[in-house]
Length: 354
Image (cartoon, rainbow, N blue to C red; front, side, top):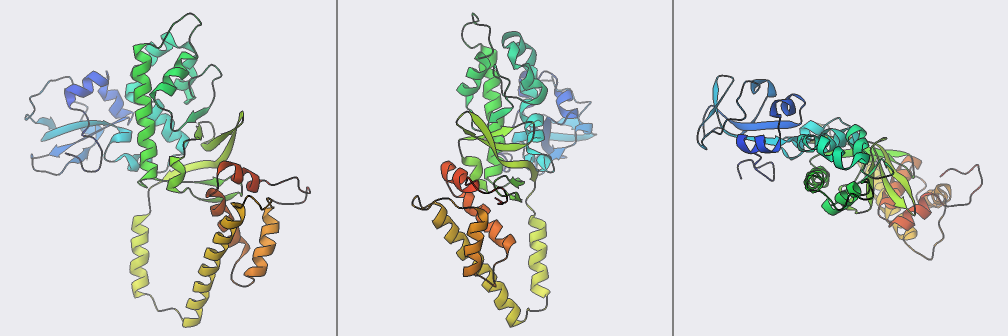
């Protein structure tokens, strides 16, 4: 592959002109990224700033080996990428809320936007999708299934048709394919850890990183209004993680910590043993909570009741904050029914905290 950091080689200039009518607009709105080899055919591929490309004749059908002239330099092997499948996709997501990233690079993707007027001419009820990212449906739901395939999205478009409009149109199938590909690219970045998601676990109110394994679950939806991850329980959507934001993995900081640790004064033996004891207690507490909560013979209990038992078992080596972290981790390992039962067991006295 030409670009090792991505799973495809992007579009040539001629191919991009077929997919996106206005390439310059896509570049200035940061929906498209251009990579190429500047200076020579042997140069490493690099991201080319949009400002350097505005005078380029994107409609020209250049011979495969001919260079383009970019900012006075020859540029070889130019490839145009939608942002989510570009080699630098994770860097462009850094600092955005999940909902903002979804709207910006999935719903407002250049290929999707190019189909907007034709889709609205067929599926009038889909207009809210292009406004704020809602899933196309007669109800205008803000919950987008993060593992929706082409057929699911096509069926959603059809649900907004007039009753006598017939089956799906070619424009809807094409747009559904692009939407499904972009959503899959975003989930792929999260499952591979190229971008990390942070939010508040709704069952506990504890903030933290969302494990990669959560993104492969087939029943999750994105609430595009609030940047929440939800599950459908019966007929309602219930938030499991709220206020989700995206961030690059802090590899540089991790390396700095390793270097600092190498030259730092060694910890006294007593302090080191205390740290080891606390880590051991956290591991044991997590294992105990998972075993307890996943046992169908054990009735769900409140957070305070579990903490009372944990405090007796690890009276000096486990804090309440550490217990809450262990419980949040344990809840994530459960199935949907178990997580719901243990996350909000009831009924309880009004003074109880959960």
